[in-house]
Length: 493
Image 1 (cartoon, helix red, strand yellow):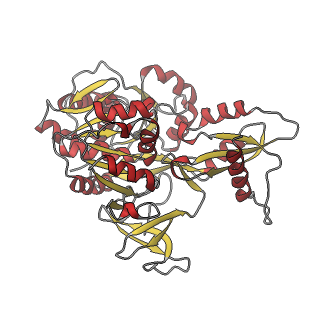
Image 2 (cartoon, one colour; image 1 turned 180 degrees about the horizontal axis):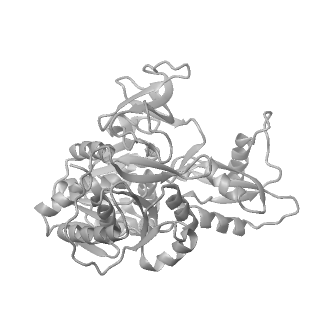
Image 3 (cartoon, one colour; image 1 turned 90 degrees about the horizontal axis):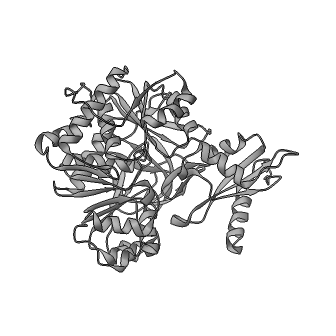
C-alpha cells in the first residue's frame, strides 16, 4: 500500500469518523476522501500527471491536508511550503523543483503569479468542491511522494526527495511502536513542511484515528497551546521539546492534572533539557519517546525514556535503530566507533532519502554530520553538529543560508550568523558589516530577512559590526562572534 491509500482505506472502513480538524473546521474520512478526489480533478485539468511536483503554499488546514492526498492520488509529489513563507521563497522552491502547479488560496494566486509568471500553472485550493470520480493512479515504493525543503548551506534551499517506500517504512514502524486505536486523537503541532508532521498525519490515518491541527498562531502561545491539549482531549502528542518546555514554563501546563486521554508523548528535533523532562514525567504517566533523525532519514533511532534516564546528568539518549534502518558511528580515522567512543553517525536503510532534488541519487550510507557517543548496548548519546547546521526551536537552520540572504542586501558587505545558548534557549544572532559609505537600519534588515526566509529562520538579533573578526586563516572568527553574543546576552543588552 502506498502512502495515499492510508486515508482512502480508512475512508472505506470508517467514512463517518472524524479524520482531521483545524481552524477552518473538520472533515470526516468520507469528506476528506471526496475533497481529495475533487482537488485531484482540479489539478488534473491543469496538467498534473504522475511524476510531477505540486507546490502547496497554504496555511495549515483540513483543506491543505486534502490537497496533499489529491496530489498523491495523481501519482505526483507534493511540496509543502508554509503559508507564512515569503513569496520570493515560494517562487525559489517552485522553480527549483520545476513544479507543474502551485496550489494555494485563490486570493494568493496573483502574488505568486507576479513572481513566477507563466513558468508554472496555478490552482485554487479553496471551495466549492465539485463531486468527482475517485482517483488512484498506480504508484510504487520508489515513486516520489513529497519533497521537503530544508535550509541549504549554499544559501539556496535543498529539496529532500522522499519516496512512498521511505515514508511507509517509518509510518509502519511508528504505528507498531505507538499502537494507536481508532479512538486516538493525534495533535499536529509541526508545520506540514516539517518532517514531524508525517507521523501525525499518516500514523493516524493508518489507524483510522483523528488528527487535530494546531493553528500556527498557537504553536508557541503557551497558555493557548496547553488549553488545546486539554480541550481537544489529545492522546498522542509529538513536537519539538521547545513547544513542551514553553507550555510548562509559561503556559501553566503543570498547574492542572494531566488529561487522562494522554498516553504517548513523542519529541524530536533537539535535545530536551533534562530538568524540564523530569517535570513533564512527574506530571503525566504517559510513555515518552525521544525520536531522532534528520529530514534526509526521517526517524532512524528512538529511545523510550526510563526512570534511570531521568537520573542522568545529560539529555536522554537518541537510542537505537528504528524503521528498519542500520545506524552506526565512525571515528575521525574512519573506523567504527566502539562503546565509549565518539564519532559521526551514519545511516542506511529504507527511510534514507532517494537524494536531493536536482542532485545525484543517494548512494551508500547517509552521513548525518551529527556527533554521537556510543553507549554500551549499542545506543547513542547525541553530542552536537560537525558543521554549521544548527537547531533553533526544533527547526534546522543552515547559517550559510541566513548569511547569504543578508549579503544579498545591497547595503551589506558581509554577514555572519551564530547560534548561542542551549536547548530551548538557543538564539540566532546575525552580525553584519555595511558597505563603505552605506547606512542601513536593523529594522530594514529584519524586514529583508522576513521577505526571504520563513519565520523559523529569522534572526533573534541583528548586530552591526565592521569589520567582522578574522582568524589566522583569514576566515570569519565565529568563536569570537559567539563570545560577543554571549557577553551581550549576559549584560542584557
